[in-house]
Image (cartoon, rainbow, N blue to C red; front, side, top):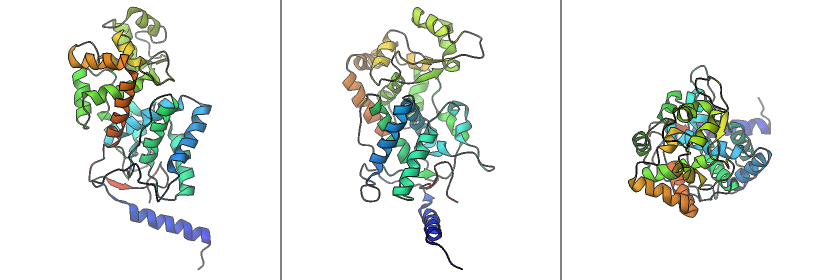
Length: 320
């Protein structure tokens, strides 16, 4: 029996994929992780991202949200990218994730990298780099993103229950972030991601219709697209400039114009927390510096050491 050159290459990739599949361990990430094995990885991610964002600017906040939803569920392991199978439910189908998008952008980046550097760059690292570049393309900061993550071979739809909810109070938010090694300052900086993007009516209906700790004119405007008791409703921007990464979010919190209850929970109780929000509202460079640090810190959240991991060849399915 003879094999073509293409068959041998395909067989080699399958065997290599089997070899790299392992159990997650404690290894240190590094911004130079791919310097020798895939030196063009960052250029590829930036190029695809630039093309996608040029065609649809809302892709940028979507990719930022995708990174957060992946890391907070079970660690930064790209488990959110796995499609459902007869044997496993997909995290995409969890209620908090049904409006998450940007998967096709990750697919395109992965396709290019598989051509350039087969079986080398993990899907979880692609998400991390894409989210960083998304922030930069919205006018925000950039940073050296540590790399070397692996992709989970399992998904946990119920892991999405670990995500903060739009209705959480300050105490609940602090607890959720602390469980992932993030402190109140990290939480406040990361929440500034809501300076871009949109929210679904179902997530802010209660806030704009209850008239509690909210600017009256702001609530009235939002009720026009999200009335009380209506099962339908539109989307609204967190701030008036949803495609510009700046510190407008914190200025809105001080003006009692936080769109979600969990947004406004960051301001109003006084003390050090209010002082932090006020500082971010006045010193945009302090916010962007802390945001970049917190993004790196969040990107270090690892899946359980018992989680089977690999470098997926296709981000939507495990290597069989």
